[in-house]
Image 1 (tube, rainbow, N blue to C red):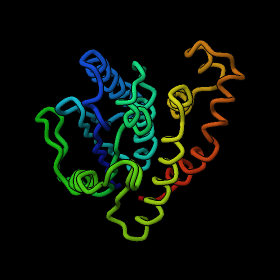
Image 2: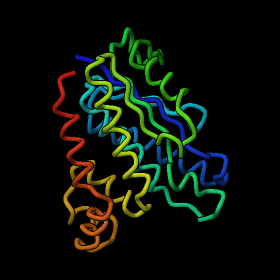
Image 3: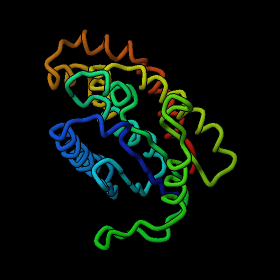
Image 4: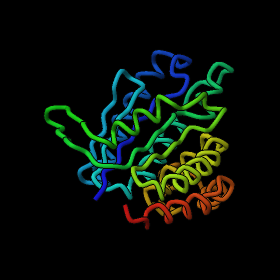
Length: 217
């Protein structure tokens, strides 16, 4: 079974205040704990405050995890300003690499192998967010690569157009929570959650996830 590696960096992180930067760091660290509960064997770490690496022993979970990272960061509450528009629109750039791993040793802090190299190179090669989007998927399987990159680009465009509140709803939808449960968490009505979900095109995102998760890696 193939591993998946995710490399990601926060977009326009320097536009955030010191307090916002500290709060975002805690938010990302808490997200990694959520991911560990959802997917045993997942290992995520935050480097230099705005760069993330995550290893998943099952590649089929990679796209959902990437979208959880995306919506978690895009739904981060902050004081609105023109300087933060890029962050508010894109939140984070994400590259997924699907391939083998030679060594994954959390205790020693070592991630070494094809998947993490692929995701790192893909992230380094990404252009500015407004050029080609902020999610890219690379695979060691040539037959899958083009389809995966297309899916990533299309879903990324939907989430980049979503509001902060819509991203909050998507974040919990990605955890398979029901609308009433999400409403209770966010202090909304069930109909408001449904409206946010529909406007953010959750039904399209869900179809893309179903396709990805049924692939044979």
